Length: 553
Image 1 (cartoon, rainbow, N blue to C red):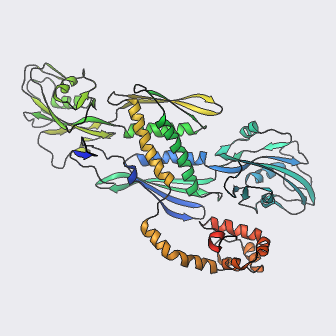
Image 2: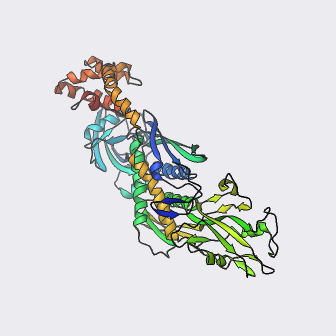
């Protein structure tokens, strides 16, 4: 991303006035994976123009927590029945409340594409060994348990108990009351369900150097999941949801005179995240034209001077120019214009219209200064396009022409934004976004420009982390060697491996992964539990048993 030029440039064959602030260029934003270990990945996203990195973080992080998909047990029915959640079941060490808390910690992931959104399984248990999460797995058709060794309860003696589990796909967190509203049944315990696979997110926005500017931003996101999905998958899924909602706004038909926009319906919580992102970006990135410097002819020695024949002093005149609102009415290459004050008793903003064919003053009645007598004075105005607030020092040329006075400029044409939540429709939320401008741009145009910026960012996110070409070449050369080394490494030496599982594999003739290839289909079936654990262990480290040992394992 290069620093914008300080002279008039040509964009796609169309002359344009110099932009004082850097343009947003989505194609310059890079999304990469900096570090990955177990279920935690650190992503780098940027560089962003000032403010956009923070807005992106404030949009993605709450959306990741609330709208990442996962599976959880939403209700449990236990036979023999217990009237209260605080009751005890004869022969079970834990009370029902403890059992339900243990049930909530069971984690599931899709075993194959097209997994059901809801599965109900009934387990009849008659034994005196601990009842684990793995007991459920053989009854599941499209899901698998990622923590099969998790203990749900301990029998004190041989007991007979039947437990029915309802497993559902959902997003974020759902209270027991919300679950109960969607399910009913006697002797059923409804659970508060934590669907999100997100365990923790850390965000950091750092300034970075682009060209000569030091205020660009880089966003670092460190995302930890519970192992049921990868950080890459949740970022892509949530980024795609945001992108689809933004496309819905851009495709909506509105009149050019509209200033109140009806948005939605959105899932509970999603609309306010989206509206806040729109509000931040509208204020920071909506562009307009403004007067950025003035020069008096004949030349004025310094900005604290007075001009004979003009009642106001130079500082007052400069401050009034800051409040002149300008819009561009046609294409052209006009950047500087000279305005004559001859034969005027009152100089208003509308008088500038006589000296330009490219721009139009939208507050023509605004008074700039008063003349006490007829004078022969000209004022040279510099007009530039920009966004946000820019101090005079930030756009002052290195070689400042004598007699030219740069001004502090507030380019933002947005005067007010209101967000109002409307009525709910079937649990979803609608919002009314009201945008007021200074008339130099229409609210519709401002909204369309803002949506385009956020769409550009989310398209980068949904494409996923980029891998640098040198990294690809390096991995291509080393991949085969690394794979072979891993196949021949003793499983017992794997970092954080379950020692009992490694010992069980060793007793069945599997000392390293390469030994799996030599096993017959019958022997593979006997190793099913150990191989499932091994595959889960490898998937948490961005590979799989099938990838290393070949299909059929």
